[in-house]
Each structure stands twice: as structure tokens, then as C-alpha cells.
Length: 76
Image (cartoon, rainbow, N blue to C red; front, side):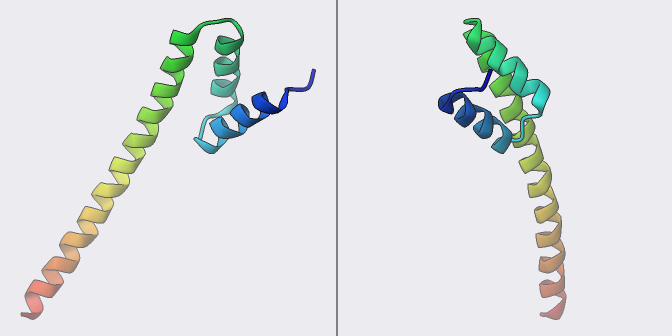
């Protein structure tokens, strides 16, 4: 059975959001079986993982900014 266009769009969106195939399959299963609360939980979990990654990268940027500030301060 081939997924319909709207299902293909959802799958692509989930892939673009970094979901692995297991998460995508679980999400589709929830949607097809009316388990909206569980499907929302899966999306929130993925969002949380992405946000954690963003915060880790922000901390790295903060470290570089601090070093650049120290270099600028030393030249003054």
C-alpha cells in the first residue's frame, strides 16, 4: 500500500524535523488509530531533543564569544 500525498507530506515533515524511522512509524500508528495524546507526546519529545541540541550549540557559541571578548579586551 502506497501512502497518500498527505501522508507523504507528514512523513517528509517528520524526517525534516529529524525524526528517525521508528518514531515516524510510531507517530503514523498513533494517528491511524486515534491516539492523539500519544502522537502529540512523540512530537513534544522530538521538539525537546531538538531544543536541547540548540542549547548545546548556543553554549559553544557563548564560549567562542567569551574568548573573542577576552582577546579584544587584551588588545585595549
